[in-house]
Length: 354
Image 1 (cartoon, one colour):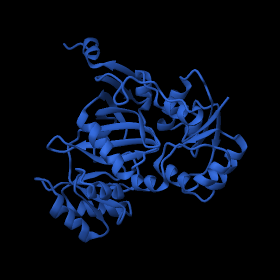
Image 2 (cartoon, helix red, strand yellow; image 1 turned 60 degrees about the vertical axis):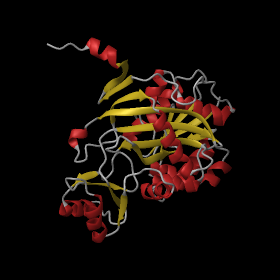
Image 3 (cartoon, helix red, strand yellow; image 1 turned 180 degrees about the horizontal axis):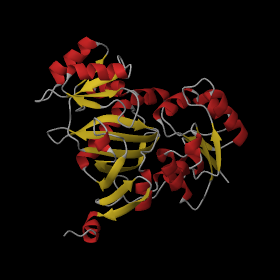
């Protein structure tokens, strides 16, 4: 029986990968690895190991020790920072006999750093929100002068990190300055044009330059968005299967501008501008988005496809490589409740109005 280690076990992004893999008849042995005991204890993984955080000094030794002890066939990571650090160790990981399914390290660096992604897309003529790296107060003043919308608002966010890290829409220079200083963020924040709240993600798997499968999901709401200044939490409340040829084209253009031979997982996040054009804002590289179990329950098990390729050289037989799922399926999520998949028409039939 093959063995797979899933990093970040117990956390929602990794646990939805584990749930997807457990639905496969092959049932590989799943081992969880993570840095939070209270997350690990909730994992469905058969075995659970605690390791230091990826940015801590002991991470490398603990990771390699675990790989040499458990001898997994594959290891998969679900967090940007850990993906970046593990990628630096890829040669040592491979020497243990453990397989990786990720793109070149340069690609990972360019995707994890949103500022680098922006520069590449801008240079390749891809429509992206105008963006300035905020190194100092002069850059911040320039951002307000050049990027502010009709009400003077700009969009601030951290260069590295998910879940809307450091995100803030504001028209107030002094507040923006204090916000950046709060995160010690000079040089690690960008300012951009403020786009619409409408977002969409194009999640895809590639193998040596060839597309294996891609599926679009648009976000209808964020969970707990009313508890943040930005309205963005990284926690999808309601997601919906969706298809659009323009999104397909923009997503593939965004990927190929960064990697001419894509290999692994590429999740292109896009936000619509006021002209209804989706603008790439980041590529979630080498990881599935948190709600990947939505696709699994809808009939497209992308984690299974991913591991079948790298472990068994088996590729899916799909009638459609792009958007094989029907449009209009909703994935409704909440805290401490099982998510539910439902069509919008069924939702309206179940809910009564007085």
